[in-house]
Image 1 (cartoon, rainbow, N blue to C red):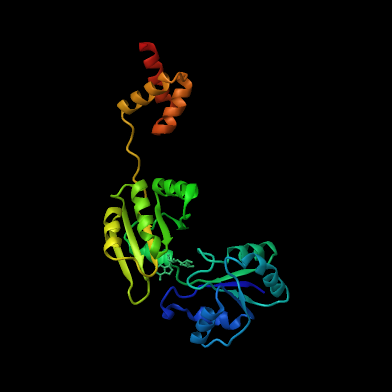
Image 2: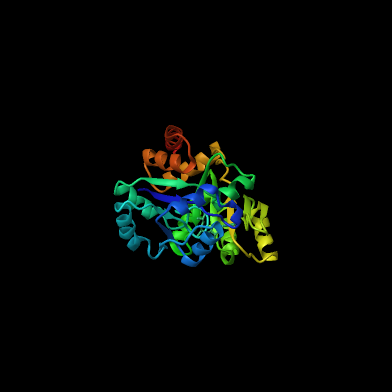
Length: 277
Ligand code: SAM
């Protein structure tokens, strides 16, 4: 029998699909993050109580063996998270990997996800995007990820907790430039749903005037294409490398990588400067 991933609402219970209710009703057991929360969802959907297995960030790895045993016995096991799609910044991914590795089928009953909901309303390009989930909270991991996000040419979707919104927007403004466009989805599908759009500088002003409450998705415009290096840029970069004692060949490699120009162009400039002394 399959492992069945079931998407659940991200705020509005009306978004629980008929297929989701059927999948929960057909399940012999349901993996969930929080039994009380999922118990309330089952009650709302009129699904009789059945074994609820706690699978959260702390228990997912230990829970795998028990879930595989149930699948081996021919049980249907559903997986839900507190909200949205399991496996998206939520438990589920490792259960799926284990079920696939053990040869069990995996089915999905798709439902809302905050990332896609915010993206499509952002007004930014949804043609090509990357999902980053939550940024690392601190240290070199955060610095490195911020640099990657800043250089990313595709639209970037991030999750953030309300009390870290101001810091994250400030960090993004520092690495992306404060004029980068951003959209913020707040309390999506809920009573106080809001879609804010502007620059990172405006966003910082917005959160300082309205202390963030509720749930947030940050959708960041992709990095603009780099401006092509001018002849003067190439000349300066080559001169600096040669002054360091680099060979013409090493200079060409370094300058080509740094300025995004063909190696032969940098090499020609290096040999020209060498000739001139
Ligand atoms: N699995 C979920 C999904 O598919 O969207 C995401 C779970 S993740 C633990 C929770 C984060 O998702 C929140 O901190 C927030 O960034 C975002 N989120 C979830 N529901 C949201 C909503 N209704 N409005 C805005 N953001 C939401």
